[in-house]
Image (tube, rainbow, N blue to C red; front, side, top):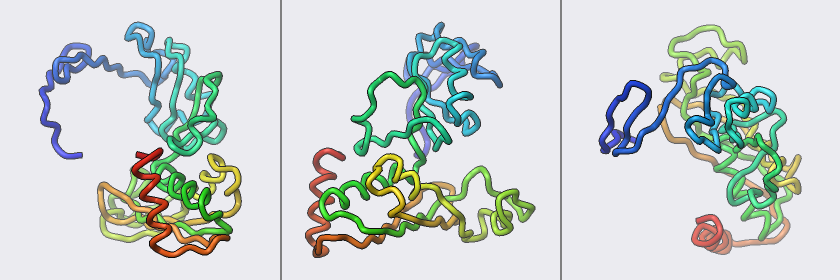
Length: 219
């Protein structure tokens, strides 16, 4: 975040960042990117376009060995660090790292559920506007309110983060729901989670459990 303080040079076929060359390509079809020439083993698919296994695996044709989709996927296995990453066996070439909201929500839900057992929960994310929203009022393919100006409105929206938690933490499948408020900020979002738990717990006990996880396995 903010201005990069390092040294950057523009080369004919890439960038030089702090003395290290970074190759770049301009291709519409991922299959045409010669990843093997750059010895790129892992590719992070962050265009937001190639989010299915079939589309994302086009990177493999160019020589990449593994593809990580930085967004929810309709069919690729989903993993969140600190939650279910240890279940990855290495035999799957295309995986999803879920959404930013899921990466915020899932670790918190896991810690609380492991210690206190969640009965049900509601999450709300106060989320910065995204590329799918409008700079001025206009028609939205998703819903009417989604067509309002992003930088001047707080817009209620759906979110798949709660359902996605059920994919990475199967015991919570169907127990969480939620919604999003798209707010007029260009960066930073927050998640609020309210749950009913089986075991009684004080505020201090919940804080202690979360602090222990934050200083330990989730650090």
